[in-house]
Amino acid sequence: MSAAEPVDLTAADLHPALGDPALTSMNFLNEVSERYPAAVSLAAGRPYEEFFDLAAVHRHLDTFHRHLVDDLGHRPEQARRLLLQYGRTKGIVHHLIARNIAVDEGITVDPEDVVVTVGCQEAMFLVLRALRAGPTDVLLAVAPTYVGLTGAARLVDLPVWPVAGGPTGIDLADLAAQVRRARAAGLRPRACYVMPDFANPSGVSIDTTHRQRLLDLAAREDLLLLEDNPYGLFHSDDGPRPPTLKALDTGRRVVYLGSFAKTVLPGARVGYVVADQRVAGPDGRVGPLADQLAMIKSMVTVNTSPIAQAVIGGRLLEHGCSLVAANTRERSAYTRNLRHLVAGLTRRFPDQPDQPDGPAVRWTVPAGGFFVVVTVPFPVDDALLDRSARDYGVLWTPMAHFYDDTAPVCALRLSVSAVTPEQIDVGLDRLAALITDELARRAG
Ligand SMILES: Cc1ncc(COP(=O)(O)O)c(C=O)c1O
Image (cartoon, rainbow, N blue to C red):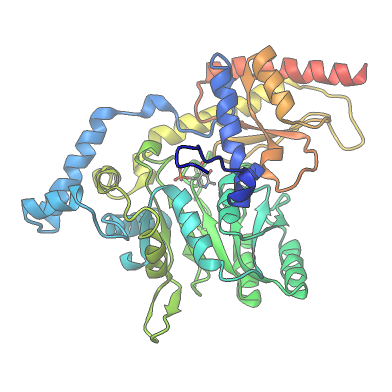
């Protein structure tokens, strides 16, 4: 082969995850929405863009800079270096994150147990990379599962074993059975991934009793729990929120994954992981799992952009480190939209003839978060989404994307976060037309 001859690679020579549906899913969904820009999107789980404020970004940066100088006693050149130079791998807003989860969630952690990451996505990757020690390791995850988790697991060669979710958010009998089944097969379940609050995609939450039972089961089975909580603040009732698993965790069973994408700004790409599990190193020195994760991070993203961290830090400082306080407007818009969507579905699918399994078109009524799942009596696949976008002008997400197999799934996910009530009305009219036509087509 001459030096000038181009080298062509084949996908078969690359990591096998690259051809996996878990990795292609997000791109496919983005492509569909790019191809049909006029379609109303009930697909995207993105925050509402009218809340974005460029001037506030500058102000947050200044607020955090002042905090470095006035509160932490840094000299101006030190503060400038902290913001603009390469920085501490575990981050520079870890103390504010520790304060935030203490104020909002009642979680008490040492800031040294926090790693600030490039979004929650990196946090998931670091944790899975660390836990996957060998070929017998597996991860349990409540199904349907967030596709970003499945994709990250693929990239570190960690098989994901589904655990039934059901109406309680996690079927504890199934979790115990899957742990036993995995162990009987010579495998080592390392952790179970759960989203106790308004899960993506199911919208289901786990009540306090089941949270406690889950922690008890994890202790009995010697399992770690990976708690992912991007939507917990967006509850629609005014009662107290159930405690997070991490707040109930007395045995360092829970690795807590956080994201500022929905509560501050997705474009900052800042998330974090609280990993207070003690790890004994080869030299006998004991430190938090966070230190091991930081070692991986130092070889992946080096450190999270300090400028982006400062924007998050400034927002936290301006609200007494409470994102509950910072998100009153957001919470009320999302809960208004959620109620509007559910009421809109009820209006568009009234008095359906009874089927043996209940109404033909059903939907969940979550107590918060961004997502509603609509179940229909026909398989919902990418081809139907394409037709929906092209012929009806409405986008949604096939639930099949959140299951780690190829079985047909008769459900779709709607998101209320990036739309107005008026757009919800238009989107639901179009969705109802699609479903009605599809039912008629299949009946006739
Ligand atoms: C359940 C869940 N976890 C993690 C993430 C990723 O968060 P980030 O944008 O902080 O990487 C998302 C984003 O939608 C999500 O829904």
